Image 1 (cartoon, rainbow, N blue to C red):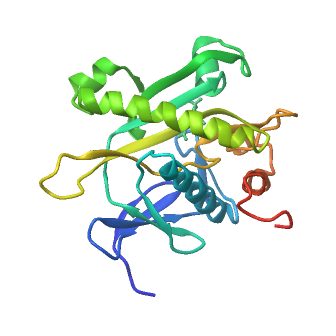
Image 2: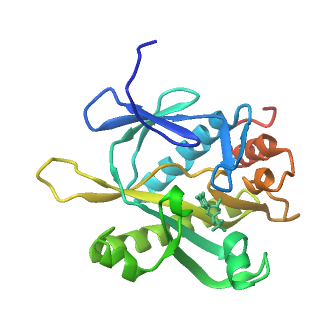
Length: 245
Ligand code: C5P
């Protein structure tokens, strides 16, 4: 295999230089981390599942007009994506209280929220991704006012679409994290905001609609076991992989 140039290596993915200018190859590892990477494991086959699940969701989002970086899947662990300049914000959308929202505000896990909440966190591992407001985003120039409005509108559209998609599979979309980037289609153009990164059970909370069973990375965070099995069940319910496997 050709030695490819690594552009960036993250905790769960590697970005390689793509075959054409303006493209990257996104490789999904089996590595899993939590709590600022203080907890680590290699979960066999997780990367393969996340590649397929993220492909499925991004492709559907394209078809409902949510612009994103996905171009096509290349193989079991890799997808071709558009190269974007990542905006240093983690955008979290919540429908049901869980995780850091429950911890921070004392709202019991499982309580439905009166409306979807959009939150922003500054992407910075050393600072543990602190929560930030629109004021910080404007003051420090992380996004323009127009980009901020676009990001909120896109995040809510992603939430609407995914809530329906998962509901059809008997799964409640509790919350999720997404990232956006600036895409310069031509060098002289104004950049467009594209949804980037991945959408998978690593970055969503997914609960079985009937039993409430967790089908996401909380199984890893809480040492519940059956992590890849739960991800495979998500893929099966979405019709991405067949019943047998
Ligand atoms: O921990 P918290 O409740 O803020 O997480 C909200 C959602 O964002 C969860 O679905 C979690 O998996 C996701 N998340 C993520 N990456 C982070 C932080 C949160 O995918 N660095």
